[in-house]
Image (cartoon, rainbow, N blue to C red; front, side, top):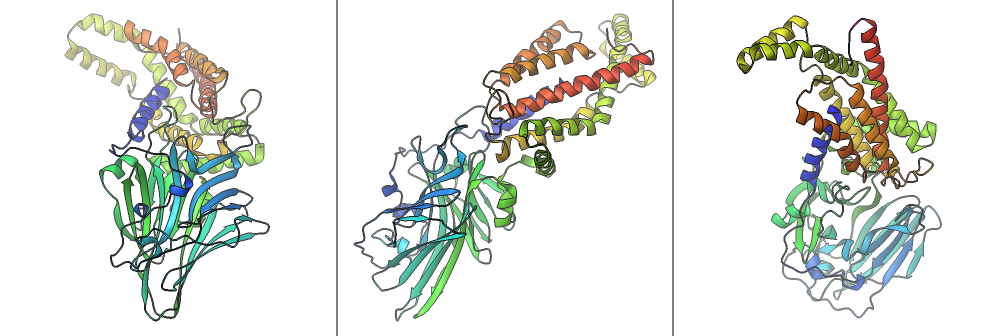
Length: 533
């Protein structure tokens, strides 16, 4: 009971912290089409003295398909305006791929990159460059797919923007090859950014973080919510670094060249939150060639994959401040799944393992509570003896605790020691992409969604009620007793919309606690101690 109550308070506080209010912007949000996603207002501020640029090339949207991605690239600017994850469906049992980037529910989510600076084509007054492409459709047939886009400015400088897709990979290589075959030096500056419509949380139960984040050499992982974007523009210089937009189960992130100095920035324009990275200017001599590179990830929150792209990018799988406990527990959960082959059974197994390891603390907790229960008759006698004299009653009570060798905090302290592990498990179940649409069996076909028939929440409430009946209590106040009686009902209602995997974990944890409680109390009763009744 105490564990659940503390968990509820912690969850409420966590909910309050992460449920950011929608940023206060005066601009009216509009729904834009892919042909409107690229404009000069989107690019970061650059230098003055920009060259004129004209183009007569027709604009188009290129489609790219790999074994895991279906991507659309706008030839104006070469932006990724849509990305579908082919191995992740929108809903359980459907055959519609999950739309990560694009336009949905009146909101926009795109990835942009370009060249600004004195001679950057994306900084031209006439608008961003419109690239040409050899084909309008590309399909991966081997291990690697290269999609080149070409542009030549009015001075004859050649720009080639190349996307490199790999089999079974959600990260895309982006390379700018600049060929300055003119008689004058030029200067360009690479920027990469993500733009997303400012939005609030869509569900009270889904309280995972939705917003931007970034990492620098000094700050491996920092959140920068829509609210913070509206309050102040981000402006941090670092070597390397990364920027990302995070949502439940999925993330998109730009990782620039880690050997260069980069400026991480943010802005809110026309109802769109923008976070990006701008590299230092690069000078290209007359007749010289230069290559500028970056890497973009758009896919599930897989810790191993993200860490391989950038040492700190796996922190976007936000396990909270207890990540150092969550990661080993996640590894254990994955190991159990590799042996068992069912995520629901793996949840039951990891609950058994954790509860078994914590049994010494559980025993100390229940033993202390039982001793407190046995002192109730003597406590009542002290109340009758001292009446309303609280000072003398308090002194007598402490003397009784000392004489009987009972620590009144003995039941709470072991519980507090267990809380970090239980909370870390909570984050694991909430953040792990592996549990999205994972089946258990029978009616539980998706452990990441609520129980469709509310069987688990009802069983959870029943187990909580049984725990109250079996557990010795020191509560004598009628009002408190009435509140305790209603607690199982309140928590059952609260858990109705929780992911069924989480409710399964709490139910199994309760059942194990009941078994451990009965075992501990039976041992004490064999010694002649009256624990219950």
